Image (cartoon, rainbow, N blue to C red; front, side, top):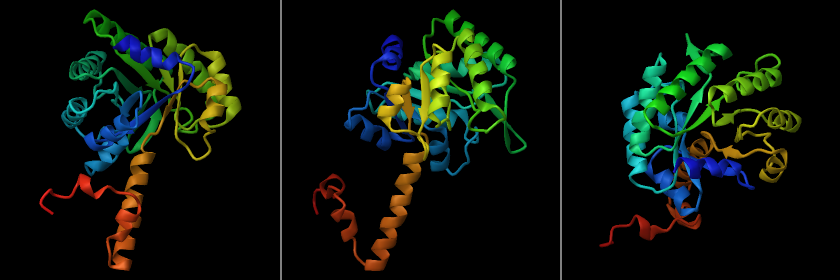
Length: 268
């Protein structure tokens, strides 16, 4: 399964990952014939009333992953943020637990939150941690896609392109399977990263992100939705409910194509 998932990152068309936060969202992407799904840490946290940044417990994450994994057949990658651990043994143990649930990949970030502020980890220290995590996984016979999220562009650090390029090379040597760069949108920057690493590049939904055809030409191999579809869904709920109240009618729900047979009790 790991090799099949890895191969999806080297196909001609970029892998479009549907980011999910519960069983219902996962089933939607399966029905739409997506090739793979991935959890969104922010979407899961928000659905449970928390902010992003490991505010939910690892056990809560495990519960949601287990429910999703038991409900759909799509390959599932799990966003583990900073790894839910301080040491390589703790992080590797968490990854092993997720792999046993059926996770085929993980996202892990090279940043951390301190006093409410997100900061980049030292690249060498993080790469050593990543290398040790990889060694432990291999010792346990665990093959799982390690998608390393570099937050140079997300944090808008000085010389973000140079920073990300240097980190990509270091992470590749440390055993990463993929490189995730949220908030990169400029075409020349994307092309530069692609030319400087053998890791398949993962980009994320942003207002200025080029269209999928352009991203393919630039060499992008994976495209994520992040938390944006989740946010859009709840904006749509607010808009629909506002219209229900203003019109004093539920007609807006059925005009927009909801199949009432899905949710209406059989005796109605």
